[in-house]
Image 1: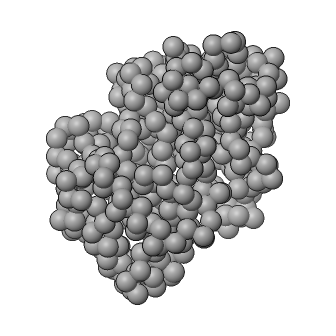
Image 2 (image 1 turned 135 degrees about the vertical axis):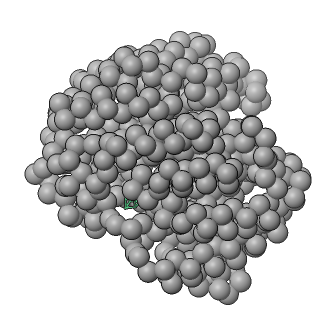
Image 3 (image 1 turned 45 degrees about the vertical axis):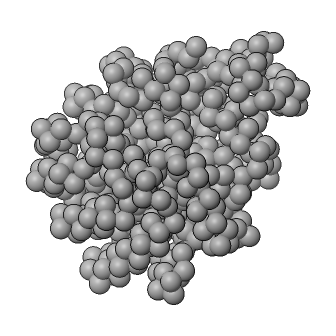
Length: 462
Ligand code: SF4
C-alpha cells in the first residue's frame, strides 16, 4: 500500500547523492547501440500489430527563439523559417513512413508534443501538423484521450491556447522555472507573472483537463527566500501538477551553460534547503508527492492512477496510460514498441539526410530480453508504488522472486539499515525517507549499472 508522504532527511540525501538514471525507460538510453538496424525496427513495428495495443505518439519540435542558458534539451535556436520548413517537410515524410507500419485499427490514445518549443509553430503550422497526424493515424477523440503539449509562455497568447484545445490538446505544461527577475536575467529567460496568469486563466476557460508547471531549483542567484516567493505565486495559481527539476550544471556537455557564472549557483546545502522548503510548501498546500520530481493535486489522475495501479514511468516522467506502444517522431526522439527501444538520429542534419533518402532516421536502440522486462517491471513497481510484494510479483511473472533476485535482495540490506526501505520476507516497502532517493533504490535492480554511474551521462539523484 503506497503512501503519499515524503520525509526530507538531509544526512541520508547527502550520503546517497550520487549520479543515477531517472528510469524513464529500462534499459536506459545509455545501453542503446547502433547494432539495432532500421530493418529490425520495421520488422518489430509490423509484428507489434498482432498485439493490437493502442498507440502513443511523441512529436519533437526542436526549435526555440532564444537560448535559456540552463537548457540540456535537444534544441535548435533559430529564427530562420527556411530551416524550420525543411525540418517540418522531413517530419511529415517520417509521419508517412512510420504510419505505414501500424494498422489503422490501432488508436492513438496518447499524444505528446515536446521540444525544444512545440509552440514555436504558429497556429496555422500547428493545425497543419495535427491534420497531417490525423490523416496518418487513427486518433481517439473521446474524453479518455491524453493529448499534451509543452508550452513556452513567451510564445503563446490566449488565442493560441484556445486553438490548442480546438486541435484536440487537453493537457499542457508551462515552463515557469522561477519568477525572480535576477534569476530570469541570469538564465536568459524572462517571463512575467501576469503573462503566465493570463495563460492559466485561458487554459481553464478553454477546458484543459490538466495544467502543469515546471520549476527548476539550483539556478543562479536562487535562495530559499527568493524561491519561496516564486512558490507563493505559483501555488496561488493552483496548477494541477508541478514538476520540480534539479539544475545540473554540466558546462562541458551543454555549451549554453557556460553562460552561467558558476559562482552564482547556490551551494549544495542551499540547494537542499530550497528543495526541503519546496517539498514542505507544496505538500502543505495540498499537493501529493507522486515520486521523483512530480507533485499533483489529490484529484489529479496521476494520484488516482497511483492508487488504482495504472501509473507508469515513461519518457515524459509519470503517466497513466499503460500498455501503449510509443511511436516517436522527430530528431532524437525515442520509440518504445513491443520489446524494443529505438532512437532517431540526434543531429538534425543526419535526421534530415536519412529521410530525404527515404530511410527512417533510426540510429540506435536495443531489443529488450526477458531479464530486462522483469527488471523494468521491478523498477516500475518501486518508482510508481514504492512497494513490491515478492509472491505477487513472482506469480504475475512466473518466477521465484527470492531466488531470481537473491543477489539484489542481499544488496538492499544497507538501504534497509539506513531506513530508506523496509525489507522483510514478504517484500520491499519504500519509506517516506526513501521516496526522495527512489533511483538509488531502483539502481539495485539495474544489471547495467557500473562504469556509467557517476559520469555526467546521468544527473545527480537530488
Ligand atoms: S529550456 Fe526550452 S525554451 Fe529554453 S532553450 Fe531549452 S528547449 Fe528552448
